[in-house]
Image 1 (cartoon, rainbow, N blue to C red):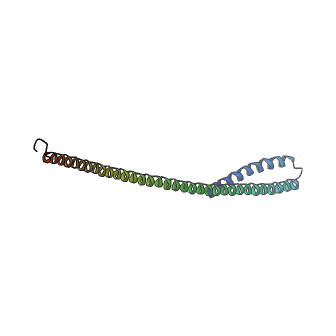
Image 2: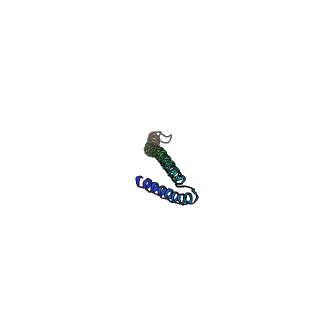
Image 3: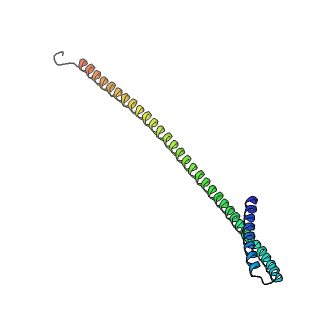
Length: 158
């Protein structure tokens, strides 16, 4: 930055020197006396110094404006970066929550399927047991009927 300022100051100095030389030539041609010429030169030199001061002040103001804008831009970018990081963390936590919920649902579904299969197996066992009891009951009744049928005395036997 100092190099740029020095280069700008040198450029201003060169422009003012060139303008001063042109004015000196014009004043020398127009001045009626040596005293008038010297007075005009002194005024030109003072004008040159004033213009130089004004232009250097203008350069300093512009540098300060640029520096201020850069600082504001850096601050704004830092805020935007922080906001983006916060949004990214928020999204990441929401995604993690969704995956956690999905895993929880998957676990519940698996448990329900297992419970369903277990209940189905128990029901099948109960149905088989009930059928076996019914078969035994029917077999016992049939055996009882056969036994009672054989034990009955028929009129022919009497």
